[in-house]
Length: 395
Image (tube, rainbow, N blue to C red; front, top):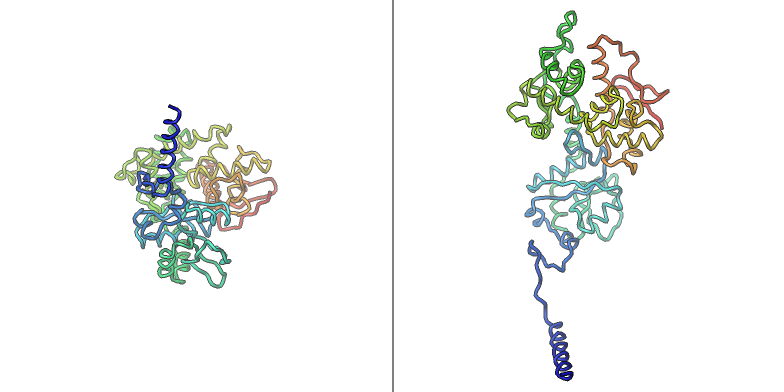
């Protein structure tokens, strides 16, 4: 029995050795790729035709006004807008992956976690990169793709024209201006003598309790959003009296057909304010919380939380707007939006800060309260009421 077992083992071993010389049948994943092939190597070899077939191009970039940032739920930034134009020409969607620094961008590109580096990358000699696309010869910067992806590089080079940069900057400037909002400007007070603010006062009074706000505060916010024009709309898709985004409307159960109707629009905004208010229950003072909610309505909840994290880091009170407002402004400064405690990067802080300022001042006006000198970012550092003036701040 021992010899038979030995001979059987020997024969089995020999067969296995012979099998080693033969090509093993490939085990395939559900996507039809060999099981042994890593995801990284699959991604690195993605050609332009693969990207088109996949329907998505992955853009690696940095946060910042020139690169990419979230603006009212839309991507913004010169490099992002250019990359979006390119994806439109090849008929694919654009996905953005924000990196911390240049090193991370290059490493992720080489690992196949992205298709293109879309930012002003200095054109140093790097073995794994192929510079292509948006190129500024005077500054020595360019986009980059993985060196094997020559097809994508050639397509980028044929697509890009130097004049595109100025064209996109002009478009971006318009998008960030009030000129991009289509609306009729009405008076902020319909009848001061009788205390009538607008034609929609009865709706503010009806739905303000949902937000647990004074109805005049809701009216002040409405004027800031649309100047009481129910047909107001922006390039970004914000609609109606309270400038509600379609995605937000869907979340609130407001149909597209009702976006421009005053009552459903105001009712939905009150529900949305109530939801944001619930997220700031850690801000104990109700009056303080109003500023946090307004800032979130305009600039985004996550950015406000970033400003709170910065306030805490620098020894300020993260639950007082006088402190947090200063860091809302600082989120447009690379020193702060690149801080490790900041999770959502750059924001147009002056716009959001000014939004809160103006609504608070108008609310005081509607109540017959003098606004005085306005709000202050921190003791000894006064910020002006109007966004046209330059803000100053310190840490």
